[in-house]
Length: 415
Image 1 (cartoon, rainbow, N blue to C red):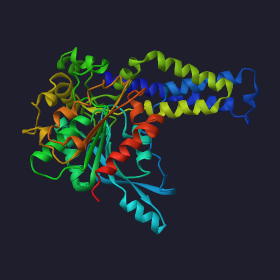
Image 2 (cartoon, rainbow, N blue to C red):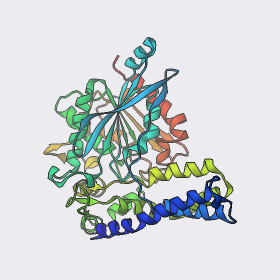
Image 3 (tube, helix red, strand yellow):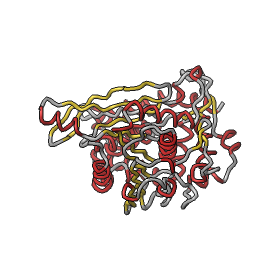
Image 4 (cartoon, one colour):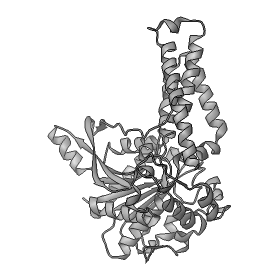
């Protein structure tokens, strides 16, 4: 019923948001006579703020038509390589007409970026992908909004997530791919590679794990405490809802994106309030650069997806309540996850000093589990002054983290 109420609210706010958007343009466009009325700029700023607070935020595009690689501007085309019900494996294919550049592009290492299925779309890693494209062939997991997946496709569990990762690695070629997992997927990625190793399959050349809850008991954060302070029944009874009839996934149980977004805001309400007030003042001052930066950030931040209920509840139970991975008790589809089975895949872990999502030590714990990886094939870095997003997006990612990731991948690339 809550989901349906949200849809009614969205239907009510939609026309109001469109009206506010049109009014803001009428009052701010210098070619409009209304923009010259007394107080027009203040009214335009208020209307735009109202528009952005009430609008529906759709999934953004990656919008990476070109990238600078090997000293040249290279065209990029986004391709779907595998189309699964709950995820698309995408590749960002780079093109050049220069023979020397083509040869260099061929020799670049191949990277699979495993994006989180934890509220935001994979486009949250746009900066990660754009930076990697300078020196790598890049694939990414683009998870599908569960409300858009027909109920006839069945359930999607954490075990299915692990199976997807295995399939994607095999499709690309384990003998030539380096896997980068950001936040939540560090756990299923480690499980997937562990299972492949235990079966005697080829495994990725390297794993780079960034800010993930491998061992949530180490320096628990507010996210960890929320998961441990309430029983699983509380999550099922309070955050799981049914997709209404106006979506392809009608009848599917999900953790709705709008509830996740409310939780994101509740973690730092003052910061978001100040950000919107600053946006309003920037509009009054005519500071379009800062105003546009605000628009771009919240166009991404406010775009959320529904998660399959089974997957979400599995993650809460397996990762954050029972700690099955670090305890060595996790079975995936009847197979025990044994990170100690990994012998050839190099391991690089990255943590942010100020990460309030995955505390210090939670990702580093992967080294304690992957005991069969030789010491000279393992590295760990703590990024000073970086929060959760800073280790994979923004200036610190580009200037501090990426050069280390690039060099680690180059060290263990099979050529």
